[in-house]
Image (tube, rainbow, N blue to C red; front, side, top):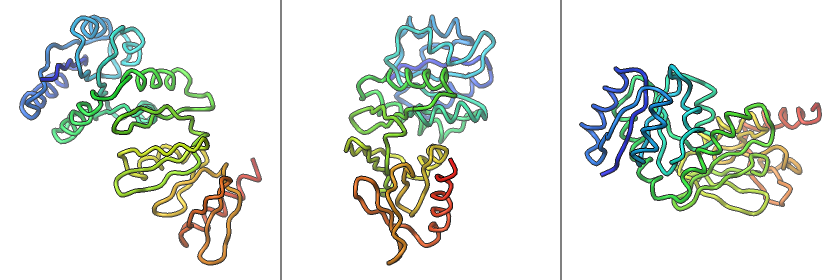
Length: 252
């Protein structure tokens, strides 16, 4: 059995989530509830749960405030939130799972399954620490992204990623120090995260960092030559957007 706690100031949200977990997640036991930051900190440090379902906005602070104050962080974290663009962006950057309110049964089950997988990873608090760093330094450059594989958690500077490649439902990241990191999320999800960092989708299977482009070879269908010598195909319908993006680099 996996011990879980729910920290949310909305009674209806608490009850709905608890009911879903009890009815559809047989191996999850909700050991207790809290309704604000102060009681949530006390609860987590006391019972040391394996999963924490955490609200963002509470009467005495935010879920981020709670994460800064707790001493015990050896758990899988799932945020329960309304639509909050900044928060959701932060979660995606740092591989923190979230579900939108009101809770949906399928979303909760999927989040719990991911949380159980994450319990097998070492240094689960790494993602939480970098989530807090992102939250506290949202306007700073050199942002990092968390990449989770089956066995490891990588903390990678976005500017060090030169190419992402689709491999079915997986995405392979290539970095400028020759790391190859395979993550079990599709390329489209990372495109939405990285498109504000000079990344562009040039092919169904390829997302590149424009900072590492050496040249565009326009003949023979077209392909990009990266600074490490790799050649990446450009789809016909993406070529015009790519040329425009490359022109834009000259104006920066």
